[in-house]
Image 1 (tube, rainbow, N blue to C red):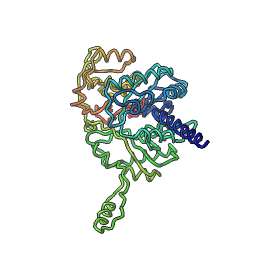
Image 2 (image 1 turned 30 degrees about the vertical axis):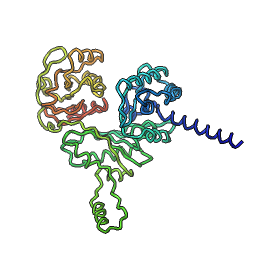
Image 3 (image 1 turned 180 degrees about the vertical axis):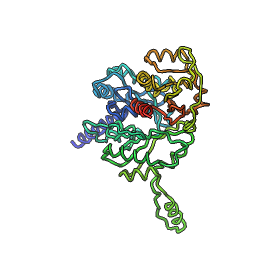
Image 4 (image 1 turned 90 degrees about the vertical axis):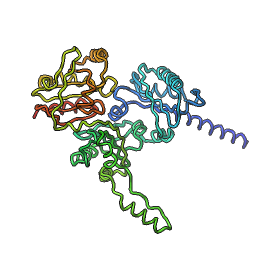
Length: 430
């Protein structure tokens, strides 16, 4: 009898461990909050990530390691809207998988997604040093409210989101709140300005974050600002002084501890009630800040219909927005329809010029503009202008020009049409 009970117990342990191992190889969630749309994807309904390391061994696929029934069921039941899906194929270093094998796995996973009712599946591959089990369990263990909301709180300087869903925990790690600093850290930033600090305080307080363990900053930078990110947003806590019987070593440790000074961002976060900070940094390069306060460099480029556009003639006497973009740039494509809306609304008194800095083929750009019904002015073959005259390092980069033709500011990336329109309205009011 005891042998039977032991056998049943061992079988139960084996089955539960097998199911746990299978369930750990995928994660599925709806794209349902403003934070999801801002940091995961703005164009799909569902997110799925698969631990591909577990499905490949000895240069062969091992799909038996994936609970395919559970995966398809999760995809089918995650949301009522099953139109579009972002499928992330995750590989952990140091795994090096041949392209042909990855493509086969991608195709098989795509077929599983299609069987769950998804017609539009966008596949993305990512590589990371983070352990899958740790990442997955952190997300699964997070107690997500039944109606979790992660709304946006924004002002001129920052966009702030509370973290309240399992998907956001998966993507953003230990973060309890996300602070996206809108303006790049550039060569002019010596410190966190009073305006930026006040804006962070205001937006974080509005977000009403309950758990305050970690505050995460999302940052971008130009070439000159890259090194300043570490000094302004250093996440290190005071060094610990280990126990030692050596008086000399004790003095060394104490001296290092005495030299420690928390970064401005860590000081601010702790004043707001957070214990730690972390940050993600997208170094954009370039030197667009060097043009602020100077006349917008002139250029003469062809529009889609072949007519030349002379910048100074085109914007003369009107405030303007000059943006540099390319077809392969997803944020640029997200921004483009909004530029057309703004052009049609303000075109008589505000100039908008989109410079194709990728030197994309004329017909490809024409086809794209036609399909998307874009009417705002687009000029071609702008790479030299982008690189040599405007010192652009990332796309899209937008320059704001006043009525006198002087560049008053710039920004990198695209956040929302509302931010663009608010700025246009402000410039027109001057």
